[in-house]
Image (cartoon, rainbow, N blue to C red; front, side):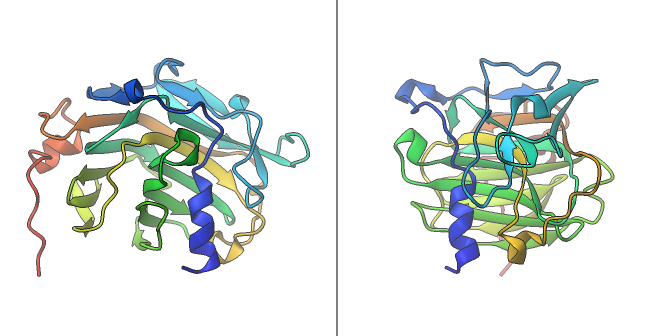
Length: 263
């Protein structure tokens, strides 16, 4: 694992209360973001996830307008940093099933917009994670990755040319023996061994860096705030029927039925 890969392991770790066993969610949900429920979501506010980050998490970088959640990166100073950014995470953890979100992605060099699941030190658990990360230095570059007991280095990049111009549905189906990543119901990657097992929290965030330039590019603030826009986010447990027409579960069929990987 090179330096960049090792550093990725730090990105998702936030300051949160330790998870309890009763915080593992078992029910399907779809959040349309008519409001940001404090019962479901914890907002990162007043810290960073490490020295790699040149922006401070601030609650004021979150807003909702016309049913769209906006997570923004702006040149509004926070503490000793020149920029501020946004992150939310579910209070509960979730296990096997379909995780999906309809998003429109901003791209700017030195930034990372993402949708992922994670559990680790703040919950007293080994680091497990499943990622969608949008690489700011290349318009349309989406990196998928996963960690199992602290071991990552499973990056693969998919090109999504119009990710910044329209909402698309990004989903991963996590099962005991596989992970499959989808865009608008089309599978773009499949892993069939050595997948995470720990229930995980769901995260959305946008952040920037002055140090991870090999990975994300040299940071260049574009002169106006960057907005990660999220129309909706949903979780459907494994072996649960489709909950709403736009769901990836509807588009691909029963999420509990493995797809056949071409040799």
